[in-house]
Image (cartoon, rainbow, N blue to C red; front, side, top):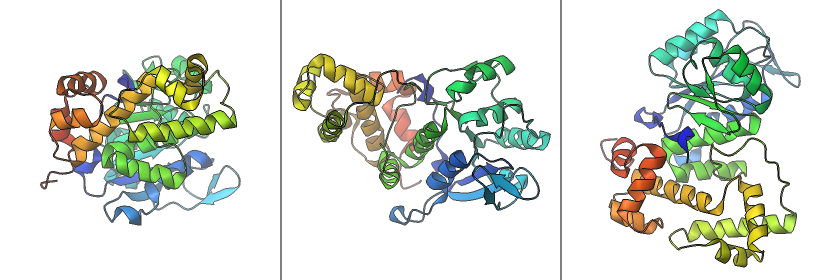
Length: 335
């Protein structure tokens, strides 16, 4: 994972973190639904230790969402006072002013350590509150120029799926919000839980935040997509083994050139980068959920030596494996 996911803040230091999603008149239904689907649904297969969830109304009176849907909120902006994570769906319009009361509530929440997450044009709400000044942030590719022009103090990151600044997270267009919310679940509950949620959604368990928002290459043909899907299944169960472009291309019956083109069209990255990301994710999961030594984890994730694991881990996450385990381990009885 690249720089856009280095700074990690884990909500699991809180028992059953409180997630509050904003609702307003003119609500963007899809982005709101993403937050509800990932954070708001009960997960009986995961036990009782899951997020608490509430919907906070920005406006008084009846709330109308895209598609003629009516929304009944759990309460007003006072709900933000007890939130551990606030989700801001896409805003109702770039030229629609953000209420001062909402800006102030978000600033107060941020000041006390609450995490803030925006989906799509929701970044403009955080920007209006002044919370993105001097920070990296992203939004839908259609709104990138507008965000730059209106808020020059923001370091706008183009062509990524999401940007993780630790306490503030922003995503690109609608579907990228799913990736960012799953990223939060993965960070809070580990890879296994995030994969379980992804399976329930029938979506890929992980897309790296640095992937481009727009892929210029066409989607692979059905037969090739099926072969790549089988390849991903194979790699997930054989991460410890060495793999080359030649061996992977032969496994799916393609030339190296065609394989590289189709692989990048499907994933937005190269096979080597994909393997590195998956091995790092597996290493993170071991660090969170097991007492294996760093040497054993390096061997079981395909890095071979602990020094190699430490190099890549520190390069990508700005933490050593030992530091990461100390902060995020779920195997520590004290947690």
